[in-house]
Image (cartoon, rainbow, N blue to C red; front, side, top):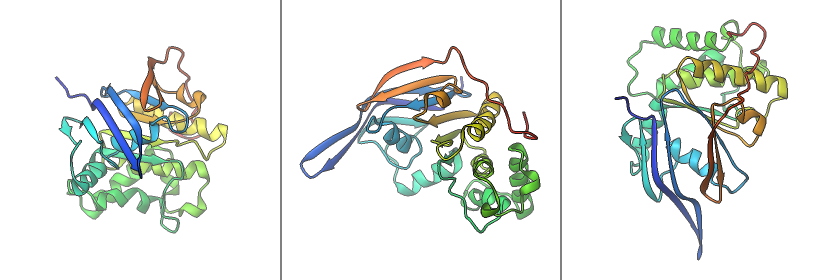
Amino acid sequence: MAHLVIEIENLTRIYRMGETEVRALDGVTIAVEPGEFLAVMGPSGSGKSTFMNIVGCLDRPTSGRYVLEGVDVSSLGRDARAEIRNDKIGFVFQNFNLLSRTSALENVELPLLYSKKSKLTDEESRARAMTCLAHVGLKDRWDHSSAQLSGGQQQRVAIARSLVNEPAILLADEPTGNLDSKTSEEVMAIFQSLNDEGKTVVLITHEPDIAQFARRVVQFRDGRILTDVAVTDRRRAAPAAGAPA
């Protein structure tokens, strides 16, 4: 039987500021199966960002258990978390986080340079990065720097970069936050296409209309899961002209 991709049990994260104790997460339990498309929502201070940081191995819980693809990462140190982060998690951020003077191809290749599992030659790395760019409809822009690309194109490069290490999950933090509504839908079409291919996607968003592109929506409030429901009337996003459907 295949492992759950994400298995979280009674997760807490407590921050202390002087004598004040803030329970950013308060006993969260959730499981994510391979191939799910999960949207995580909640107002500011609800715990969704803390949840994302722990799922992304950017932080670790105060207590509780977090298992990623069968590996308990709850108490791993900084270096071990960094290795897991690079090899098992593909990040997509609101601000793209691309190197501005570097080509799209080189931006996509970058995670391979830090991967301990990658044994690819330079030629193989370049070929894999080019395949990922083709996957998001940007094969013909491989030599463009970030400054030469629109916001939507930059986010598509970021998605290609998130795929290059063949991660267990794609973790997208407000990926449409800096995009107009049309471009947002084009980006969500890519996530839906990747999910249709079997990729596991965890999307952090504050926009209810964006969450409706997912298959399941989890609402956080006060550090706890308020609701966890399947999307019954799922929206299908229209891809960009010329992009893979």
